[in-house]
Image: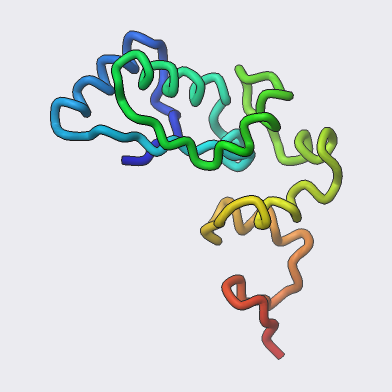
Length: 130
């Protein structure tokens, strides 16, 4: 099962939800971690869900965990625009993300890339229409 952690309110509520999931056979939670998610969901919620998983014995698959250090550099109790990541990690931060993880090209992710991708580019092959 996958989550973006938007549902997290507090540790007790999260533990109750996780125990209910475990009772119906869910044993692992894929938890999305990225600057794209952080544009809508404070990182504190992600950390709260991971903590509740540990408390209840739910296995955790953090995806993409390598963004954790980047997110730790920002206030975890609020959301952040991509421009904030670029201000800290460089103007090419967004361009370097596809090299760090597999990406599914759909809004809102695709919209973030329209500022530097050539028009009429096939996202899967990198070819341009003539």
